[in-house]
Image (cartoon, rainbow, N blue to C red; front, side, top):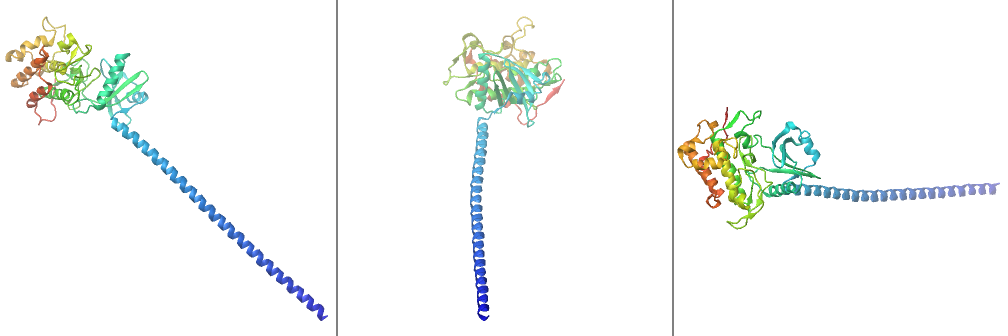
Length: 389
């Protein structure tokens, strides 16, 4: 009996040890498994974070590249100084090119008042002249105004070249062209406004400064070729800027030279030697400027066939009278009502007489014209005075 009890106790102890060993093995294996899972999870997290970090850096690099590309595009646009508009944008800006927004007409086409998306007021010129000449005028104006910068030249903001539709976008000049103030049309918004003498003098000076920039500060010089009162625009304070460079030509590199070209321009403003020979010089612009001066003095258009015999052509009628004090007073614009200085009238009459001389060599340089006009303009009076009729 005792022997059997001992065997039973031994068996029981043996199985207990076996259970303890198995439990330890299970615990060890479980611990190893958990540790393996933790290691695997940690490695997964490490790899995942690394991948996300690379992806984030890659996206950041791409965004930076895009930003740089966008900035580069903006820089190019700013360097060019011109915006490229779509036809849709300008169609919207002008109210569908509404007739109520028409502010002028020219050889190029109609000009519309417009408002861009950012609220800026602009003037939009829509080309209606098809063919090679219209294309040449468009390209000339864009290329010239891309590089010309002067406070006395109308600024080109941008353009649209959409298939056959060509448009130019300029800064807006609230008071339109000089012509409509000198010869107001019935029903015009400006019919009750007339330019006083002081304002006319300043317009004459600022227009001359615009030509001076083209002739003296650009190399080779630029010859406008179509200077006239309708191409001298006025802002809200009646400061003047020269506009419309569609017919402009680059002048000769050497002084006294000329360029030969077909005769283009507006009747009454074209210099006689250019009309006869096609030889174009900066003095051709001086002649046209002299005609504008005569318009400011007399209030008459360059050619008016309704006038009595001998008075139809402004230059031919006025030139013999410009150097005579008493006769010069007789040709003054009645709208001025005598409110001018006689001394200044005689001086401006003399300048205009020199500018419209038939022989180009006898005409002054536009820089000399500027120097002659500067003392006549009251620079301390910043605001123009416009009389109400």
